[in-house]
Length: 439
Image (cartoon, rainbow, N blue to C red):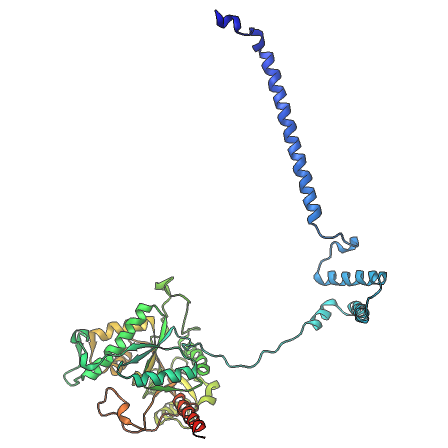
């Protein structure tokens, strides 16, 4: 057969031939591996050689245990090598002389002392701590009727003068108020709530809802007819610290940068309502608090006395005298008992939820009196600052513009005393600008 004739002899495929070929292949592979390893080791050695710094001048530089010893050694070596070349200028000569003096000093005193003397000291200026543009709250909301653009203008001016950032929420007009938006039960047989009172409630309720929707931890709510001290951003941190002392919360305005990350664990529970502005507040009687341990009832803010007007209102003096046996002007934060008015108050996220829930079910009195009613029942943790930081501004030129609730306006009354009234600052600035133009 053709296959048998052309096939190689069987001896060519003997086991001995196959063993010799495998041995040759193994030797070849071993040689290649050894060559690759030698190449890699050579390359690694070259990299280490060229990547290392310049060789040390002396083996004594090895084994230094501290930065101070290293610096002293460098100075010593530089001193030894400096005579090998001639200085190029007088300034360089002075530099080398300075090195000699420093070497002598390092031999005479500990190196740490020499380094300490070389470090310049800086004294920070004694500047007051300022709150941010929202007074360290999450936001500042202002309740403003869209028809009262005059008040919006005034608030914009005084906010700019004090460096505040305000967010306006439209008030509710009593003439267009829908009955479906009111509480389930409101008023009593003895108290008939007027449409203006109900519209006032609905406006505040809309802000409480917005606080919940925006997810802010704390918010300050203002009505658009208020005034404050021009220096309010300096005053607020002191009041914040006092609220922290009376509540036991070291950071009572904010606990986190982002509430939405762990929403259920970030709610502030030390307080619900904080009145920065009130028309009246009542003190606790002797049997209602312990004068030996007043921390939960009243906290003094002695560092803020320079921001107070010389005269306080009678009810503020009465409260201060009851707690301190002294009628001298002072700022205090107290546990709220009867805080009248809602022109300036702060709420926490939990406080906003509770207000919206409680008052949406039953509002027997106007909104501020209903809040007092629930505070007296212990449903809200509330505190007040006195003298108030936010007060209602009275237009002495046209009293009819003072109130959107009381139809006939409010009778003339002296404006509450601030050392630096933001509203009065605005008026003085306008008069000064007018005088400059006429002259």
